[in-house]
Amino acid sequence: MIITFNATALGSDVTKLLALVEYANIDDNLSGNISIDFIFDDGNVSGAQGTGGELSATQTITVNVANINDAPTFSGNATVTTIEDTADPVGATVSSLFSSLFVDADSAVGGHSLEGVAIVGVDEQGGTWWYQSNASGAWTSISNTTSDSTALFLDAATLIRFIPAANDTDASYGTIPTLSVHAVDNSDGGQTYSVS
Image (cartoon, rainbow, N blue to C red; front, side):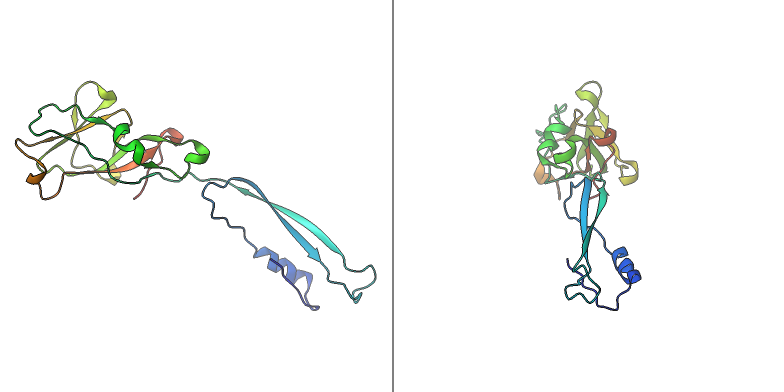
């Protein structure tokens, strides 16, 4: 960018203009120090400003860019498979259901990966959703009162299953029962949630 001042420009005009210069970058993982060089040239080609010819000076300004932790998302939907009239299905881990769908803009710089999911909605028509912590022990029903403000966090090792009502199949439902979840990454102890 080149800015040219006319002969009537004052030093205060230059200062005002420079105060309006901003730095922007669309790189989602940019961080560190960015150097911006300003070259000031007096334009004294003809000597109208005195002897010594055209003079210039360079000033470097350093912009410190701090990377922010972006919320992860999922690239698609996961599917839990249940066989009709199975009283005690084994379920599937959060990791096996969602790892291949996990997307995090910070993965390239922070090595972020799937920590788990935050369940924010439960559709229990025709059956019930359950989870089992650490893939062992008792199964716990997933409450239909879950919401964004009362999300249920399940880590990657947790098992999830759906137990349909007797004799129910996909054809029994107007819409397939679902869980609504947000992705959770492993940054800061797994505190970054998607909001979509």
